[in-house]
Structure formats: C-alpha cells, structure tokens
Length: 455
Ligand code: ASP
Image (cartoon, rainbow, N blue to C red):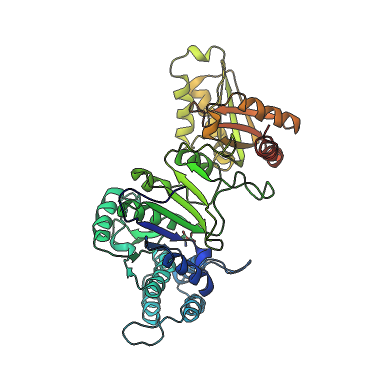
C-alpha cells in the first residue's frame, strides 16, 4: 500500500508493544525504527514485556507489587526487581542525563513510587508505572518531549474513556509538539487518580494519539508481521493478511483473534486513519494494513477465520411462536434479568436459540430457565453445552456464490457436525457452531478449502 498523502508532510504515530521494548537490544531496534522515518514523530511505548520464555512482564510485577503493598507487607524485593529491569535498559542504551552528563537515573522516580505504594497503594497507579518509566527512557533516548498520559487522557465517572475531552486536550497539546512520547495504557480517572485501560490497552492509547494528532498512519509495532488468516496454534504456518477492513477485524478480534486490543480501532476509525501492524524484529515486512475500506481484492475469498470454545445454546420451542408479538423480547428479558449477555440468536419457525458463554451462564442456568417459563410459557427448553463458534470473515464473500456451500462441504468432509449456522445480513461473516472437540479440525478444514487448495 502506498504511504504518501496529498497533504505534504506525513505524520505517523508509532506504538511499540512490550516485546519490542523488553530489553536494551529491543529498545534500540524500536528507536532505530523511529529514526529511520522522519514522519514517525509521536511514540507510544508499552511496559517492558517478556525477554524469554518464562520471564515476567513488568506490568505483572507491578500488579504483584500492589498486592504485596495492599497487604501492608514490604515491597523492597519486588521493587528492586522492577528497578533492575529499567536499569538494564537504561545502562544498556548508555543514556546520559541531559543536564549533568551522568548516566540517566530513575532513582527519584523509584523513590516516589516507593513512598506512594507504602503510604497509599493504588492498583492502577502501580500498573501504570510500567509504561510511564519506559516512556521516560524512550523520550530521553530519542530526544523527544515526554507527555504524561495523566494530563491528556481522561475517563468519565463510569470509568469509560471520555473521547471528546481527550481528543480536544491531547489534540491541542500535540499541535505545539514537534515530536513526543506518550505512555500507553493509562490516563486520568474522573477522581483525578491514575486509571488504566484493560490489559493490552497501550494499543488504545496509540489509536487515541493518532486520532488527536490527525496522523496519516497509526503504526503498531509488535512481534509478529501482522494478522494471519488463522491462528498459528491451530493451523501450521498460516498465510498472512495484507489488508483487512476495520469491520472485518472487529469480527475477528471479537471472536478471539488477538494481535490488537479489540477497542483499539474505535478512535482511528473516527478519522479513517489506517493502522499498520508491523514486526519490530522484521522491520522490512509490510505487515497488515487495517483500513476503513479498500478496493484491494483480498488474497483469498475469506480474509480470516477465528473462533472461541465453550458456549452454550438455550433452545426454546413453542408452537406458533412466530405469530406471538413480543415473544423474542420476553426471552431476552429472561437473560437480561440475570445479567447475561447474549452472543447469537439463530432462530427457526417454532424455535429460537440463544447462544451464551458457558462460564457466564452456568451459575444462573436454572434461574434463566424458570424466567423463560414464567415470561413465555414455552413447550420445551433444551440446553446444549460444549459449543464452539467459528467465524469465517471476509469482504470477498459478498459477491461470491457458493461460499457457504464450500464451508459446509469442507466440514462434512472432515466429519464435523455443524450444530448451528448464523450468517450476518452484511454477508461479511458466517458463523458456524461445532462441538468443542471438533474446533481445531473444523478450522483446519475451512482454512484448507479456501487457502491451501483454493478451490
Ligand atoms: N503493559 C500493559 C499490559 O501488559 C498494557 C500494554 O502492554 O498494552 O497489559
């Protein structure tokens, strides 16, 4: 995909994930990437991730530190471990303090953290220090301005991101910045305290910054060269996806594809800014482009396959339910009363099926069944467990005859019984329900028919 714009100077926001900043060597690669392209002016770092299998992410150490502090126990050991991670990075990079010329030190910062955590420990504050400290190092190393996310990213009283306020304040701040480093993962809660996003939330910060900066591209640097057509733990060495639309990605990440935080597309989507997923360890790979829409033909009829296990289906049967006004609403009310969210609702003439997460449903199962009886007086209610859902997603399916036919032929061939089918009216996805035990076989069969053999 071309990276030029008509407006002259390009602006890019680059976010680096934890594995891209796990140690000094990775840090150097990330900084080289920033320096290699003058348009990479805004940087969002995560906290240092795992350096090797079995290593612990700094964010996990910070959560542990908070647990210890909340119990009133001593945090010196764990704080020492965290400090060693940053010292290894700063020393490895050989950074000097700009004023004194002495080696760059985070001693003052660690003292502030120690005091705060021993006097009034706070979980979100603790967790946020991972990206905060990494960003101080990155800003110093690149010679970029440091912006504390607490001053520019805001949450409302319900703990939800205040998008407009954030966009205005951060947008104003960036107008005057030549370049800047903004820590990922946290902002300022309605009470003025530090508040974090959910895990992996630095992806959201990158997206927020791209929107506020009106960037041309949001580059998200990680340890894989973009999205794969299927999960590599299920399909060996799957093909990569060159270009995917926001909507396709939304469907795939909702169903479990995890490279990017599922909420990260919303801020950039607002401005139609493309996201480019790149690999810090293979910077020459193009990665995956996530775009609003494209005339680029996908490589295959399907763009991707993703799925999740452990759903339950609740099947409600009642003769002539289709002519009973309000029937569906009453069924849904039964789930709502128990606070259960619904995943899918395929329905027949005299039957309606509600698919829910097994883990959410188990405890409340009988409650829901009696509520459905009370509200709708059905003939029977059946519950089936161990259901896996697989989403086959692709903008290319819309104009293609026989896609569903090929999916079902492939599944029949692989001796997989299809327990449920749901095709969205947008024709962007087809969801099939299979037994948990058939999950991997089904994904491989679908992958093979569309990608390996391409018949
Ligand atoms: N450091 C945080 C986490 O481990 C946020 C992030 O990396 O995006 O979840």
